[in-house]
Length: 161
Image (cartoon, rainbow, N blue to C red; front, side):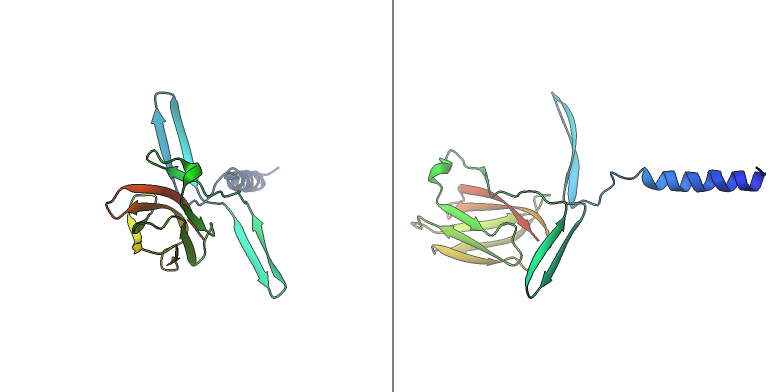
């Protein structure tokens, strides 16, 4: 084998093997590293690949998918089985519905991004509030529901598609 063929083989192999070494590479919405007494962990938020096909006869979602659940992240001592708030749909595209079953007082809601920046907020005095989320980008947000005296009543994780 001559020197040119050997160089071509080595260069081609390096390029080929270099490209397949990134099999775990992904573009995520957010992430970071956490350390504590028990060790450290690296985490990421987001999906590697997701596509949606729609037609007049229906739609299908393809790609890496995870089951999303609506769960309260904090309750300040409130029994979650007696929670008076419901938010849906989650993930949300444009309109998020906030239902307040008790509705005996005014509430405030606020959406924070993963860095803690407030992106959307408002007030509600009704049993059902429709929140327009079309102005905020795709991502994962924390929705904080508080009383008019600023006491946190409920916190939800909301996913915006």
